[in-house]
Every structure is written in structure tokens, then in C-alpha cells.
Length: 208
Length: 156
Ligand SMILES: [Cu+2]
Image (cartoon, rainbow over all chains, first blue to last red; front, side, top):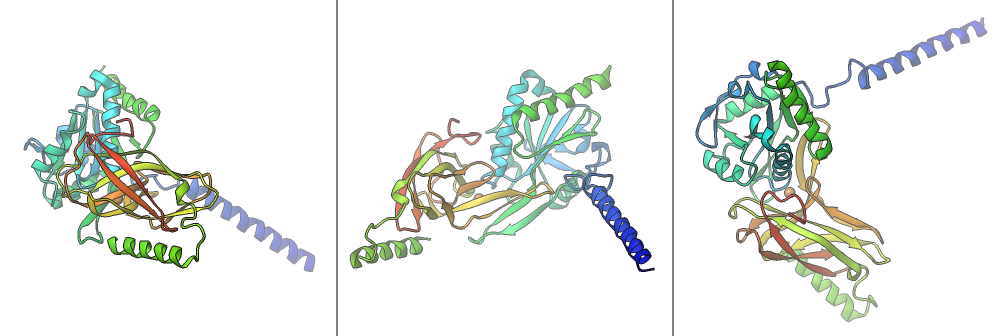
């Protein structure tokens, strides 16, 4: 009787262990695994927001459909991550050469209070000429971020100022406005440029 | 910041005068700073950032406690981090201990010398002095070249 009970416990234990392993797998590697960047961004065609580019044109997600697109969120008062990402992007664009002009490359500010159209114009002027700077009312920036499943948050600093926490990855879309992939912050150029080429080729395949 | 520096100096002098510490410095005289660079700023409202490698060539651990420069009223060592959701943030890094023979890299996207409250614009082609202060009272001053806004490293 006792032995039987032991076996029973043993079997139950093995069952629990198996279940635990299964749940662990489901969560970590299986279908239950979280998307690396939270949720997947919407296709550009499903997004809705209205902003102004650094040359005072009214722009929205519709302007990005028809050509492959790279989008990055940031702010011009950011001393480290944003200029680094923008100079990385500029480097990728240089490497792409003529192909770079076949893309939309957009830097959307998460700090519209300080990043006016003029501030954006001056700032993007220091980077690759293909890069556009978009700003606008806070509610429209929030709608844009929601569409990309990006997040941002205002954080006060010691000196009485503030800084912004924000999603730092680069979003890469094909010409139809479907997400191809993300380029993680600080991804080496050997990985980033082929990813961009893939978005450019998907465009060619779609057109033929 | 400035107050703290003065205090550290006073303490070092006091210790030396009292003969409490035979060598005035313990470690920081063996610190070497390499590949310092920074990016130009637009005006003075935006904070600047500087990067470098701090190498401890000595036999004692050294602790980097602070920064000083005439260029900025609030220089501070910061660290940028990106979490698992891909969200990046930045915060003061506190004191940084460098073990003997080791080095610490201040580089884009990680540790950086954050230059808050700029006193003048950072102009491409110019230099500025940046003083690193250590817990033993020692100081190391480096001339930091200012590169373009879109610079990617010490070579531009
Ligand atoms: Cu910082």
C-alpha cells in the first residue's frame, strides 16, 4: 500500500515536473514566448496619425507606403543614444549608396515640447540627407508610438530639467508597409545593412 | 559637485600634512585615459557627452568618483541602458571601480561623461579639458577633442 502511494506520488511528481518544463518551454521558446519588442507593430496602412516634417509638410503613415521605410523614435536633447543611432543609420545609408534614396527614413521625436519643426530641421541637417524629422502635437506622437508599439516616458532630472526614456530600436518596413524586422540598438553594421537590403529586395519582388 | 571636489582636495591635503598616508595617492597616478572624444553641440541648451577609455595600469584598484570641466557646470558619469522591451534610459552611474590592469570604456550607448549645463557651445575642431577625480584624491585631466555631431568614434 505504502509502496503504491509512493509510486502515485512519484507519478504525480513527474507529471508536475513535466508540466512545469512544458510551461517553461511555452513561455520561453514556444508559442507563448513574448515578442522581443513587446507587441508587433501594426502595418503602416493600419496606423493613423498626423505630424509635420522638418520642412513643414503635413505627413502621416500614408506617406511612407510605396517605398521601404526605416523609423526611429528619439529626441534632440538626447546626448548619447539618439545621436549614436542617427549616426549609425547615416553609416548604413552611406553603405547602401544610391539605394538609400529609394527609402523613407524617419526620426520621430518623443519630445515635441522642445523639438519644434525648426529644432528638428537643424538637428537632422547634421546627419544623412535622406533622414526626415517628424514632430507634432503630443497626442499625435502618442498615436504614432501606439501604432509602432513603441513607448516613451518623460523623466525628471536633478537639474530641474527632464529626459525621455524611449524605444530605441529601428523599425524596418517593406514598400507595402508591413514590418520586415527591427534593427536593435547597436546592432553591428554587418547585420543591419543586409536587413535593410532585404527590405529593399522585398520591394523589388513585390513589384515584379 | 564643486563643493564635493573641494572637500576631497581638503581631505587629501589634510591626510598628507598629518602624515597619515605615506603616498599621497594610492592608484590614480597609474590611470591612463585614452581615445577621448566628444560630439559638437547645437547651442548650450542640450547636454553634451564625452567618451574615453580609462585604464588602470597600477597595482591597486582605483575608484572614479567624479568629473569637473570649465565647459559644463554639471558633468556627471551616466549610463545608458536598454531593457528587454527595447526601451532605453539614462541615469547617473555612481562611482566606478577599476581593478588593477583593467579598463573601463565610456562609449556610445553605455557609460558616458554627461556634460550638463554647458557654459558655451561645443564647437567641432576645438578641445576642452576634462578632469577625472578618484577616491584617493588624485586627478587626471585630459584634453577632449570635439568632433562632428554625427561622429561615431574617436576617429570621427
Ligand atoms: Cu547621460
